Structure formats: structure tokens, C-alpha cells
Image (cartoon, rainbow, N blue to C red; front, side):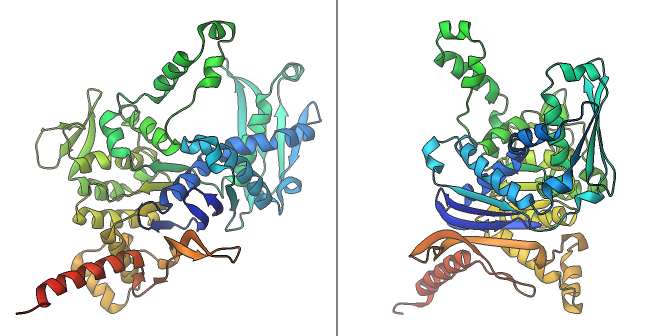
Length: 463
């Protein structure tokens, strides 16, 4: 996937390609979070937007009372990017909600998503049964044969057609989303920069209850009696989607603890690498979430008692163990938060393992340690006789090496504006060398300045 943005908060313009590993670096207040949240918001909401766009088109196609048929080739061949562009325009209208900000902040914003690769959805087979509530009565079956562009909708209950059943259009839209668009728009999970606070206050941070109470206080009691649905219309949040979703996820941890995700089953070494970083493991004992340090016997710590590192990586650990699956996009804002340089290096190696296991990872970072460790993994990927010797000497696993062609890195900065007039705040692609890694000028310049100052202190002046 590619995204083109204009007038997005602090960014005048930006182009981002979601690689297997995408990194954004830059100074504070230069637009990294705007780009990250905007990408997350689109991947989080595209299904709802697509459903809205397809509603009228599907209704026009549904003409046969006994069997409906959607010709996907006629609808989408050569038109996927056109649909994505329409989805981007619709998404911009929801950006204030995604960022929990005023409606006028994104009045001039442009968002144009597009595909990076061709996906042959005709080869995919698909089948889904639509059932009625607790009775389990089959209402309809949606089916597409492999090699055919036709999606058949077989309606089992003829009486159903005589009464309102708007949900059928939604089911068809969901099927189209799965078959045509999902290969380009993967499932997404985010670990926001506010995750440490979410880990501490997760029991108190009930977003739904907070919104409900706020709305009840603001709605007139007489109006509420006349129209009880007013409370649903008035519910809004004071938090950006990434923060709200992060809090909602950590509030569920006791409930999802017993699940083992697809990726964890296929790659248990990922969990071992993660546990090595935190020096133990998370456990749920008698419905209480605790951390048990390796070698500490039965001693356990609640999240209030555990170190900031343990809290900062809480949702990452549960995502890897319970939710992660190949094809996901995992976004983490500033993974270096509360991590010692040793663990920042270890996290970079964990990221490489995740990428090689099939997860697309999106990172914003200020960490020179993390980037330098990724550079090491890039250089070791050359697999020359010398790099193999170094790899063995320092204990790098083959699953930790990463191909530089799978990486895109962007640095916030100024570049010539598209209009040709002046400079624009944007994301500048970094150069990646197989034998040297990534050049990050913002880090290098700061380090060189510090070295020059210290050299002047040590060796300058009169003796």
C-alpha cells in the first residue's frame, strides 16, 4: 500500500509506502505522529467506508429474487485504485474523529491510498453462510468459485425478501472487502506512545463508560426521554483512535490470556525472544494480570509494581501471543520507551524476526540504538564469509537477518514543494545500503556535534 497525504497536520505533503518494515525518524513536532495515526486510521476504518461506497452499487445489481450474482471483474478490474481514492476522500471527513480534534483541522487534507502490487482475486475461493440469530436458520449463502469472477448470493428464505433485510447488502460488501480489497489492506494493531499509562490505569480507563456519562450530563433530560437514541448519537471520544484502541485492548488481557494466536503457534521462538527482553513473562493468576521474573521463583508483580519496561511492552507481548497472524500490520510508536540500550537492540532483533515471520512492522523512533542494530542486521544479511563469521561470533540467529529491499525508511524534513514554490515539510526517503545500512542524518549530525563539543573540552584550550 502507498499513501499520499497533503496538508496533514504538521506535514505539508508526504508519500509513504508500507514495506515489510517501515520506519519514520525525525525531530519532535515534525509530523511523525500525524503520518502514523493517519495510516492507522485508514487501515482501521476502510471496511466501513467501503461498505458505504458500495451500498448503492450492490442494490442496483441485486435484481433476481432467487439468486443474486455480482460480477467482480465488471465492478473492479482496473478500478481498485479508483475505489481506494474514493475511500481516501471519504476517510478525510472522518479524520477529526480519528485524531479526536476539531473538525476544521483537516479541512484541506488530501489522502490518496493506492496499491503497490497486483493481486489476482479471481483465483480466490470464498464461501460464507448468513444465519439468523440464536435459531441458526440459514438466510443466505455467499459463494465464489476459484477461477471465477462471479460472487453468487443464494437466498434460502424467500419470505425474507418481503421484509426489510438491509444486512444482506452489508454481508455482500463484506465479502467483496475480503475477496478484492483485503489482500491490499491488511489487519492492523497499534501500540501507541501512551501504552505505559494504559497499562497502569487500564482498569479505570473504561472509554465506553466515560463517553456514556459525558453524554448523559450534556443531554437535556426531557430530550432524552423523547428520544433515547440521542445518547448514541451524542457519544464521542476525547481520545484519538490509536490511544482509545490501545486502552480497549489492554482492558481485555485477562479475557484473551488463554488464547494462542496463529503466529505464536507457528513461531514460538518469537515469544521466547520477547520474554528474553522483559526477563520473564506475563501471567494471569486468579483473574489478575501479573509479571513473573525469570529466576524469581513464585514472586509476582502487578502492573503497578512492575518496572516501566514491563508496562511499556505489555500490549506488545499479548499481541504477539494472542492476536498476531501473518499478513498483519503492527504499528508501534517509539518502541524505545523505557528500554535500556541493550533492550532497544534486542527489540530491533525481535522486529526482524516478526518481519521474517510475515508481519509488516511500522515504527516511529528516536532511537539511534534501534536503527544501528537494524543496520547490523542488514549488513549481516550479505552472508559473505566474513559476515557469517561475525554472525556466529556475536550470536545472531538466521531469522534475525533482514533483507534491505524489504525496508522503507523516512526522515522528516524540508524538501522542494510539489508546487515548485518554497520548501515543504515532508517525509524524505532514506538511502539504504546493503553493506552499510541506513543513513539517518538527524542522528548522525547530533552525535557528531556532541563528539565535537567533547573533543573541544578534552583537547582544546590552553595547557
